[in-house]
Image 1 (cartoon, rainbow, N blue to C red):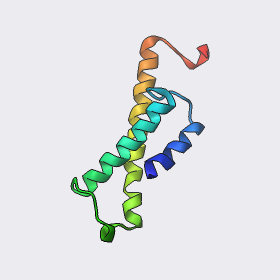
Image 2: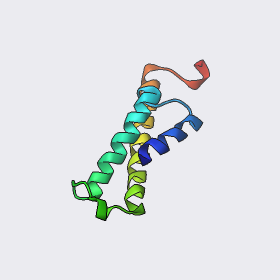
Image 3: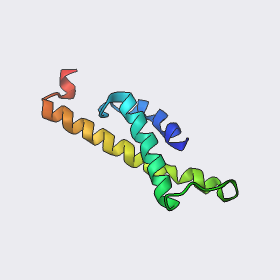
Image 4: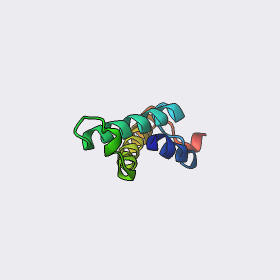
Length: 87
């Protein structure tokens, strides 16, 4: 859920995400989920193991996913010859 929360802040950035806003959503959700699984040793923690730190574990993954999606979209736009001045 933290990936979804962070995704909402992408409206403040230029839309250079690979796949647009939907691509950014998928990148944030996959990044947060994958990073959370890696931190927990590829297991889902039980109810007794969940704390506020569990929610915070998704923040770096969401940011990494969004960053990769943004720079991939920017790279593809430059390769296609599109520049922000053309918009």
